[in-house]
Amino acid sequence: MVFCGDFMQILPVIPKGIRQDIVGASINSSYLWRSAKVFRLTKNLRIRTVQSQIEAKEIEEFSNWIANIGDGTVGNSNDGEADIQIPYEFLVKCDDDPIAKIVDSTFPLFRHGIEDLSYLKDSAILAPTLDVVDSID
Image (cartoon, rainbow, N blue to C red; front, side, top):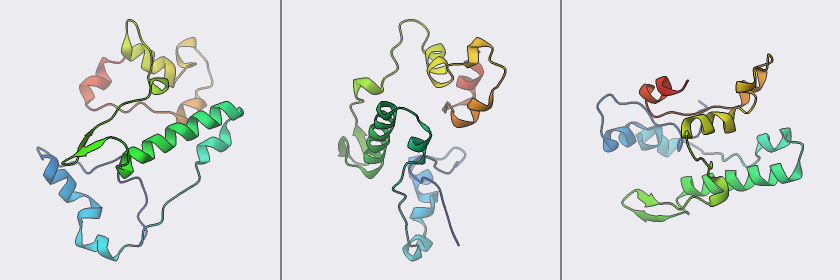
């Protein structure tokens, strides 16, 4: 049997569950996990699609930073939680409307009325609740 995905990104949904319930329901907490052989992907395929060496380097640096967070090598761990300093270059700078700035930085052509929306398939904005989703115009 083959499982794939990033177990650090997507946790199971346990209605009214607390952190302990959610972590306990993940596949790597199962007794079956001891029998699994883990293969780690090492090539970032997103880098292949960019034209600029500078952009490729930025994507690689961000990807490595995210992976280091998941591996627990960034921040001072404190009972499964850590304070992490986000590098300034990874921040979305905003003065007035943070949601609009996030949308514009993720989908730069969206608000310009571009007919070909195929570029949307390569980007996403994750929201913690449906209320946040509904607040985006």
